[in-house]
Length: 259
Image (cartoon, rainbow, N blue to C red; front, side, top):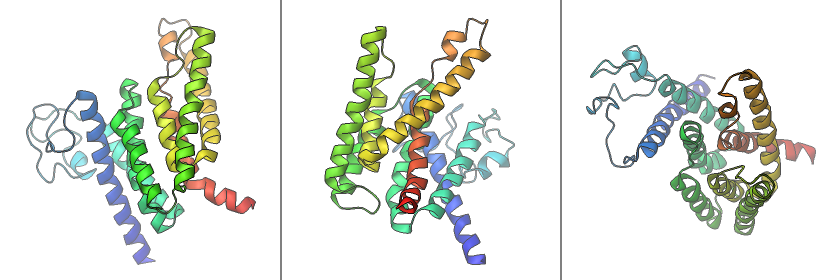
């Protein structure tokens, strides 16, 4: 029992570190900065962070949510993302067998990065979607646990791309404007590679229902205000990514139980 607690705690700690990385990668991508080689530094004054200031969760709480170097108040999203990624990794660890868990750690990081960039700026970076697609194909080629076989991965990528591309084309033909960005097209192709073609329709349906529901609530909340039109614009990637993770964690068990 104690061993399980320590193991889960270790997974949560690793998840918090990965959440910190995902946060930095998302923010620096939107700022056009290097997130690979550039050392961690304060976003306000640019001073390089010390080891303790750079620790996830602890570094934020240690100084009451303020930067140690210049005393500026840090966004709470730093803490929330680290906690969320810690919980996400623990959930994955408990739901997936160990080889599949290790195969999909990069996928989970990419889902968090895409969620953050799409939420902040309606942008899904190519390095995350197309890079994730290429990584998924590479893992499928080497038959990584949990990924589709290579033919299904390729078929999933093609179907994911075509599905959103033609839905958007039909919407543009009817309404005269795009209903989704091309980043969503590339994201669905990536999801098809990692999760297979059978996952695409359930993920798209669930994301569409949740997005439409939130959009209706946003419009109702903004009734009588000029912000009503803006409130209806929602980043679709922020609905696709959590639904993809839900499919990853729970669909295999539900499908096997149904059989």
